Length: 153
View 1 (cartoon, rainbow, N blue to C red):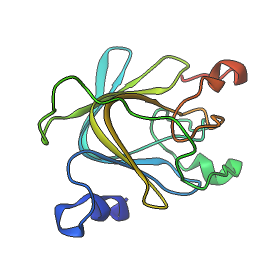
View 2: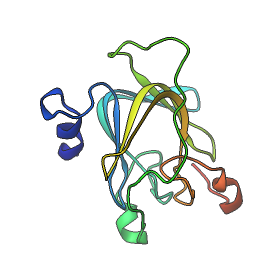
View 3: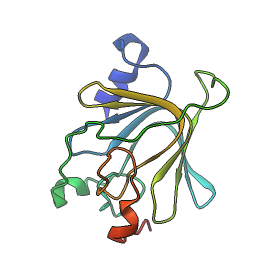
View 4: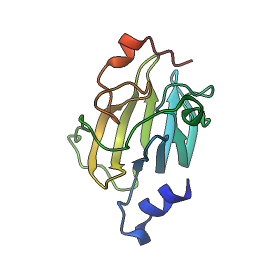
């Protein structure tokens, strides 16, 4: 994950703060002040984490490399969707909480910049990121997890 850290570091010229990089056919690589919440409990409070976006990890919401085994195919570009800006301007050092919805998406709560493999970005404080692997608006959720029967646990 060092590539994600380098791209989001202040010295790299990349975005500062909380960053989610979307590499081709790989996990969502987050750096910054990241908290991951499952069933109302913070299960990770870290500055560097890889979250599954293929839907096949045996350690959801974390990546276990299953995207390689299942042949997950995605270019890592933004196909649609967005993050919504908050009412108040967040402080640059505010954490982002990634809430893992049961059998659903990764809900963004706090400041985040999503960086696609082609350099395109989206910024905001609320949104839903796909973790079933089937969204037509990757890396954002389009609700397809309901049709595919995605199970988060």
